Image (tube, rainbow, N blue to C red; front, side):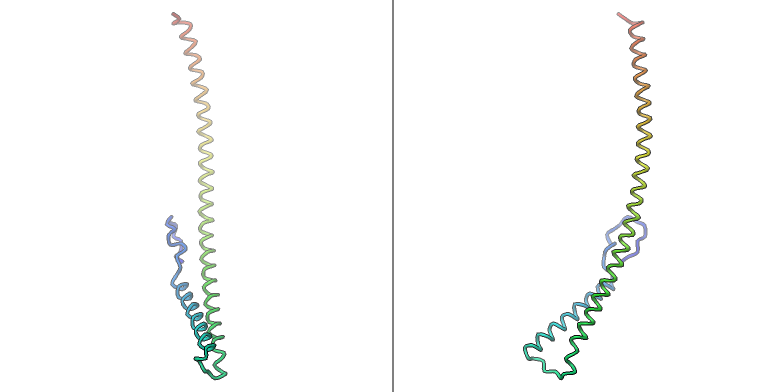
Length: 134
């Protein structure tokens, strides 16, 4: 996984690294070898001495280690991604709080302006009715 450099491009955040791709290939290759060997052995095409009977188990262990390694790397990548997202959410929460504060100040100012406009209307109406009554 690429390290987060602070920009907002999340496209490569969960892109698998070369290590994960290689470990996944090794894992599936080990699985394929064990599977093919088992099928050929069951069909009687492979006649191996008893000491070679343990080789599929070694292949299985290699496959299992590759799977565990891949899983560990992916969990680390997910953890790093969650840390990045947590920081982003914190930043968004801070921005929302700032906006809420600004909106509250604007609303207070608008209330004052509305009160002044209402007072001006009343004064204007009184002036018009007293001095310009037709």
